[in-house]
Length: 110
Image (cartoon, rainbow, N blue to C red; front, side, top):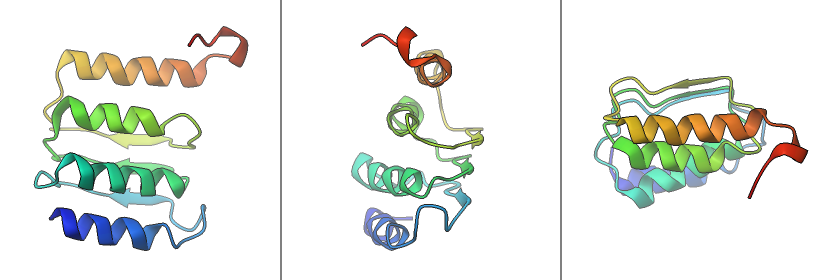
């Protein structure tokens, strides 16, 4: 999976209405640069996905940072990150983003 393919897929996904696609699998997308990954993650969250499969992507902590950025207004119920090369710092970043989603607005800090 190359960056040019990722950009094309992202553009195509953005053509769909927000609830048109409920699950997206991007398994083993380890050949992507940050730009390709960012475009796919943005498109995925535009779709209001319920399930995002990133298993085997081997993109490390940067993957989690990009996913965490998109989690704010999303309906994601299942995020699959097996074998992504995450460190404990990446897991903590994701946990922090998820915790912010669960907090009532009055308790959220900037």
